[in-house]
Amino acid sequence: MRAAVIGVGAIGRNHARLYNEIENVELVAVADNDPAAAARVGGQLHTRSYGDYREMLAQERIDAVSVSVPTMLHHQVALDCIAAGVNVLVEKPIAATVAEGEAMIAAATKAGVKFTVGHIERFNPAIIELKQRLDAGEIGRVFQVHARRLGPFPARIRDVGVVIDLAIHDVDIMRYLVGSEVSRVYAETAQNLNTAHEDLLSGLLRFDNGTIGVLDINWLTPTKIRELQVTGEKGMFLASYLTQDLYFYENDYVNTEWDTISNITGVSEGKMVRLRIDRKEPLRVELESFIRCIATDTAPIVSGADGLHALAVVQKIVESGEQNRAIDL
Ligand SMILES: NC(=O)c1ccc[n+]([C@@H]2O[C@H](COP(=O)([O-])OP(=O)(O)OC[C@H]3O[C@@H](n4cnc5c(N)ncnc54)[C@H](O)[C@@H]3O)[C@@H](O)[C@H]2O)c1
Image 1: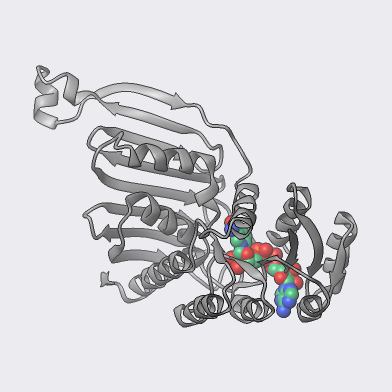
Image 2 (image 1 turned 180 degrees about the horizontal axis):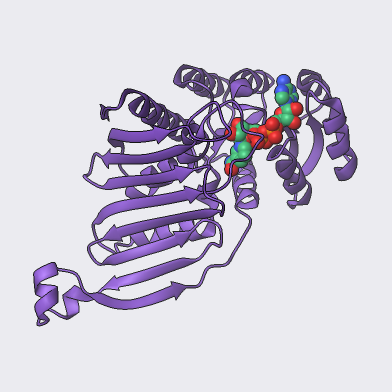
């Protein structure tokens, strides 16, 4: 499988490194409109580099490409790759607007190429394990999902605020875990330091099936915290996206019905277990999955529609914060 990367900045150079390492994949070229950046990454990974991605598409035979240019350019670059008959993984968010995302999906469908969006947390081993356990009914009905994604401001992000850049990860994961669509959002957002856009979100989501989502997201906390709590009838899971740890807190109510307190609250503390997870680099798992879907002609784990849903929800969250009102989707 012949792979290439367009845009070898902060995330793109990791795509290139990993294609170079994955078995049965050859990194044939990288492109960046900063030719020095392209040449540097190309030199390090012993592959060809281009200052113009269109030239790369014309010169090289490519099966799979990662599009990791700034979000505003996802649409144009992805359309050019699709027109060249290349299978595309575009970084999140799918595009700058829903209309652009729709056009990309339509073009990929028409051209018969695979199209997926880099919602990397789907490939986080802790999330994969959590999804399996939720689907197996281990905590019964899910009442609430609560995400915390806190940390310092990365100076390179200039074109969007923290909602579009970071909250989109948790919105996608919540949709995936809950298995239901967001029907209403309400957000308090604020712009405090360093950025032309919001850098703080305290947000609420309502899913069609009644589950409540809580988003606590910022670029203001001087330490990185990325956690997800899922509370249900039979207990709570706590996942760390960063350390890939997964904990289960049992609701022992079912076993202790004689207990006066638990009869009142319906909840009582049971055992707490740290589950064993085989840690893996999520981006590597994501790229391996993309390559596999091309090789086996199967649907990608993250569809274009998934990318579009996540974008539509975060745009409504931004709108809700600006207009100080709840918004139905
Ligand atoms: N999945 C994740 O966790 C994750 C993490 C970081 C970034 N991203 C996404 O990846 C994208 C890139 O983000 P980044 O942080 O790597 O940005 P970045 O600015 O570090 O890198 C972007 C690169 O694209 C290049 N570029 C710009 N215009 C180009 C063009 N016309 N042709 C070719 N190359 C061009 C730039 O020179 C730069 O090297 C964004 O959409 C961002 O949302 C995703």
